Length: 566
Image 1 (cartoon, helix red, strand yellow):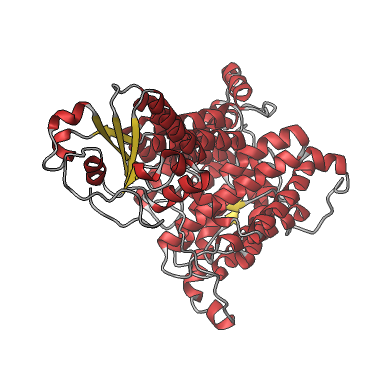
Image 2 (cartoon, rainbow, N blue to C red):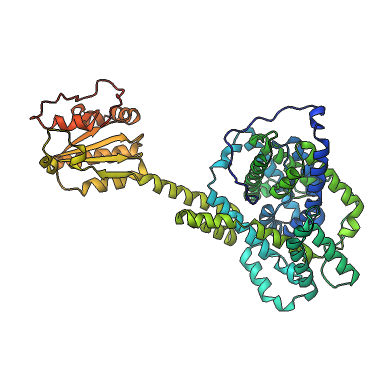
């Protein structure tokens, strides 16, 4: 998930949040006011649209943007983050709402918030940097497809029950397309066209808002028979209770949905914070504090009738580009939305669902990582395959499983790449020192091993050497083997015993300290024999050619090897 031309990479040098007083808070009042108000204008249609996409009433999206926006701005780890309902969260929420209902979503949201706070307190915020790029690109593209197809009912003006899973929902929309409402289709196309074309005319007013106003005005003026979002209370979100909060059986049932919400909320919020870091020279974000702030927001939101929220990349980018630099901009964004609810709620109730569908379809198309697809195709097919796999699992199953499968696939690829150690025979003309007949190459074989010898490389390591012609002396140059694990150790022992059965002597040269210490602790160095270990390959060759008068440095003078060139 990223904004165009913004690279998502988690910084390993995250600064701790700076303390600030009132004077610093208001140091950028004009910029924060402009950024917060602009972000609120952009957030208004998106909050309504993502609420509908989540399967809840539009007011829940507005309440979420207000409450979460203010709470996360105050307690979060990014000074410019804008928090609210997002498309990625809607993908998970729509299934949870369909299966459990909104009241259960409130409980799952509180649980997710507690999990996020626990992750922040445990200082696990930087773990998101270990998610490979093909995985993030894959689930982002999957989310985009789900959002687009999930709006087909509203695009066609169909009033059908919402499906929990992607394929049944898509099939339902396709099989009922003959009952489409042409007025709704025209309004949706109008909004899509306005979204795309309006920025070429005016960059101050968001195209999504302009399209929303235009479609609503046309539907109201011509009294078009299209589904609308319905009445929105002209009141601020009020504190309320959560039913069944003490039902521990229900809490156990909601553990998996809560984990899914916490995982996605954490990933998206931290990615958004990183994008914001790349766009501003002000205070950088603190990952752990950001998780705590997002967790507090998700704990509080349900008590005001909202849905779980995350940091929103697009709205955060708008805030920064409009001049926002401190937490005040996020607070202003929430307050501005509250004022809009108090003054314009009756008008918002007349917004056609088709207009929101048009907005979400444009958002989903812009979410697709077109550049990532091209980059991965040009780079390695294996990474591209990981992205496609994650993409498909996101669409066909669910987002959390997709991340898990993607991580496993990426891990397997990493192991495969690490196991592709370089194991090459060195020609006699390059390795034999002066005075040593080249004819001895039939008896002495020298191989250079490059890269770590660990469990992924061990099998190939053994197989490769076993297939070589029988020789009397096999020299392994290990100067470029930085480390070795237990399985690699067993592989080396197997090689030693195989060669011993074939009356072939194994000689090791250039052992690095970590590898030498492992061989000593395991006893394998004693088994192979110190007389078969040399600092350089030249010393090893001279030791097995007694006709040479060259002094030989057999055995190691100490546990620490002297770096000598071969």
